[in-house]
Image: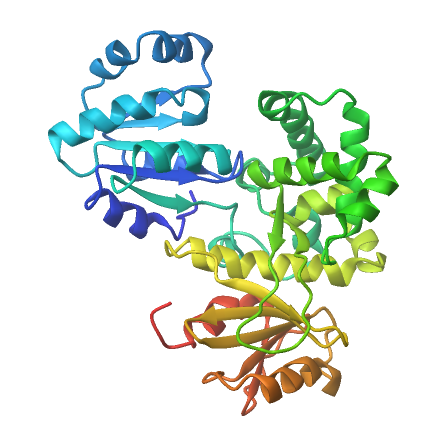
Amino acid sequence: MIKRHIEPVLKKLSEQYPVVTITGPRQSGKTTLCRNVFPHYKYVNLEAIDTRHFAINDPRGFLAQYNKYVILDEIQRAPELLSYIQVIVDERREPGQFIITGSQQFELISNISQTLAGRTALLKLLPFSISEIKGHYDVSSIDKLILTGFYPRIYDLSLNPTQALGDYLVTYVERDLRQLVAIKDLSLFEKFLKLCAGRIGQVLNLQSLASDVGISHTTARAWITLLEASYIVFLLPPWYGNVSKRLIKSPKLYFYDVGLASYLLGLENENQVSRDPLRGNLFENLVLMEILKYRFNRGKRCNLYFYRDSKGNEVDVIYEIGRDVFPIEIKAGATVTNEYFKGIKKFSKIYSYMPWGGAVIYGGSEPQLRTDVKVYPIWMIEEMLESVNVET
């Protein structure tokens, strides 16, 4: 059993709040995490039809049978329970009464904000990080990591990633998607998904995407929001700071799991990954998600942006810390060249709040601890972020 890095944070918050809410993609390990951290809690899966009907039709009776110390899995299936949970925790005023999980972020967080504001801590659990599986599985091949992705079931059961990710997608489309919204033409939506994968790491142009799929701009926007809500795609916002330049205003498009993006691109083995024209974009997606997992596994918010001005000058990731920033460039090549530092050097001339300098994460294996811009392989992302020696 692989220990998740978020465990200490979850335990601590359960001692401070009456409710802890954990959201994240389906199959990211939320259930396993909760049952391991709280083995003495009763476990209730609201995906079970009879259990869900009981919870919806008689919420008071349903909650009364569990008293307290209960894990409610997939709470978005019975959101009516949240109002009744509010009453219970206000009466008891004890920490750690309920652990609830959900795999839809926007609607669920909105419901929780209305009913459990100030009563629940919020955590996000993404699939495995490299640092979590390192030591348990071989992580030396970047192409294999890109192809496989990081969903725990693939590793725990030694599944073929192409088969497993295909099944994951079918499950998502046939179950979750139809719960969230009525889509008349599923084949069009699947085409939309594949074209999103083909635009990975690019600035999102909804008009172009809609045109290529054959849908309206309004529908494309709704579908992107749907994919965000279900933890399929991640939109990296542009960074503005106080720079008085004309900057890009649209986000960049990524996937929460790089393996799913690889599957949608039709990649089936490592050789195909190594030759694919989007390998650099997939590598960038891999690194970005590792940085995001570092944040979420410590109970922190997302503080990640990208920088690009109207002249095309850009930095892949701006790691923001108050007014200070830590710019990070991501390069898939295994050989460091002067081009790797170009973006950060230009950025440093227009924004001076860079006390830790900058960093380059590349496809090579050896770190280079240069004066202003340090170079790290992907296996040292955690060490890189921990070197930014402030409480972030």
